[in-house]
Length: 361
Image (cartoon, rainbow, N blue to C red):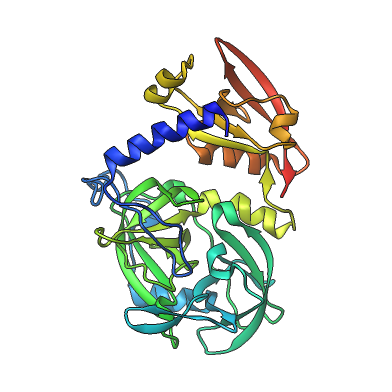
């Protein structure tokens, strides 16, 4: 392990110890993680700005009736059973939603991880075989396809950039794998731009909500008042936190979904990065506290081939400044496999631009 990576890990461990008394675990098949937001984060004050059409909630029963044909329960076959609230719940149970007329369904990767066979159940109770056609483990997203999509109805994708704190939202999913009809919960957007860190997975650009997101809801839609998907339910905070759930913002998911629809693997440049900070910059002697610090380079990967090094600081990607891993991910996904993405680098006291090829993994 390189000295840069060791130094960063030491800094991050110290910060984590100071900021949180609890440890964190990766999402399991129910979507639970041990994330605990800092005190005061649970209920930010609602934004008092002008309301967008999707921020006004109509009759919830009408909204649910309109989107239910596009929400499906997902189960692995055969399913291993786990215990949730004293009940046997299929370990691979989750939710998905239909995005087009060709039978494509979006869900979380952890719902379908390791599955040999997959089945979906529609709101009408019809069970259909499904196959995995795309996956992005680093974004916890997967794409399924069914042949007979006649009974399925796509749900329109919204614009999560327009989501406001305090805006009402509806979460729909296969809670606790109870069967019959989907479970519906109502809440508000508590915060946007959240991040959760699991053992081997960091998810950024998340919507935090107090709508109940229970085991089995993973992969289901988080809807605005217009019945549009603004998030993909991914996790509930376990432990001391209550009424705190997370959803992947649909804007960050759209380029990933597009790549999966095109049959492309996950775009990859081969860097391990950490958001920069004054503490990290001082510890490592960096010329800037902005951007993303490269902690490690994958041997033989595109970044290494382009000449990037641990300790380099990425301050822009694809012509846009970066401050969070999601910013770099978005630039790489926008460029796409087979293209290159220009990265502006601070190395020592100098700046340079490096074109890094985007490969598939």
